[in-house]
Length: 447
Image (cartoon, rainbow, N blue to C red; front, side, top):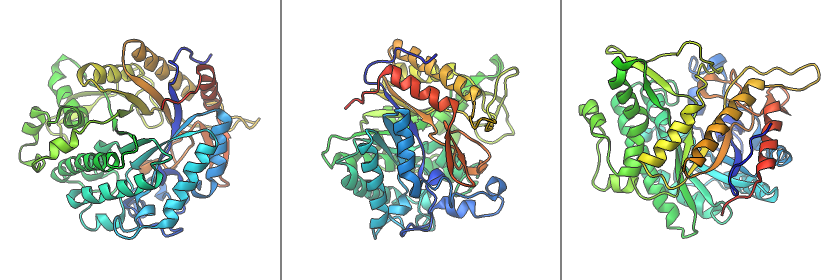
């Protein structure tokens, strides 16, 4: 049975990202992104998959809007492809790219769907990467210029703006672990990138505020409770928490980096210019929270920074991504943000699970494990609201199966199935169930 009792005005939606669904990577003046370059480099992505076609959303967006409308979903979180707007990352504007997003936004609004726009979901223009990418401080200023342009063009129709999606992943998975674009393996670079990303967030907030349109502005962080494998590993969990969570939360909400992490980084700590922390900690209207799993760790003195090893608890359920299913962690994250950081407003901007999906003989996709996952996490979200957390909405990841970064097309997160051969969309059981949840809880959007 659908979960009932969410507050009036709670925002229900789904989420996607440009490179994961749009395709059309060489159409209408779009420039190359770091993910185009990375995915076309042999060995970087499973099975040599790329986002060249993906879900062909660039051409099929009217169909995808109808899917959301049929399911009764009142909100949609999308991202804008920076190189589709600025093929070189700066300078000449590609009007064809802006036209696409204007058509998309107008289509959503015409269907009664409120757009939430993310400005950066990892697809940096390759031209800027050639100039140093996020390790180059100038990229922060280019990002603010990009935010200003898109805000001016869409800000009369889009009220909710997210500057960055998961800067921790862009910084460390892309520049230290080398598993995402641009594929670097340099801890010092990754730490500086993390700072430059946060500076660019602050500068983009300033640019959007200057438009004086009363926009709701935030940033999305991926947060994961760090727990020790035993009492002997409490310090390891503290380091993991500092690395993954506090390194981003503290500058955003306290105007400083955590002292223990600065000490651990030592000479690798970022170069911070005068006024940076004031820029980073400029007030935001909401925090986007992406939650998938907890992290259970033990000490690993010989391991990668922060010298921890992730443990897989025995007897737990795991998704196709080998992530532990731990719904309680969502409650823990939301309450911590409320109690320790006094976050004014929160949206769960991503939550979901990848499981193998199969089309049954009758053409249906009965993804019972995903449905159970979503139900368990919504229960924890509801519990957090009851305990005072200022949670205003929930966005399932994802609307449809898509390009899952380094995993290519091997993982399916969607509540809508995509046949990549013919681009057919099939709503899964979880999608029908989620639509019922939305309808039975009401779907008014807060303004």
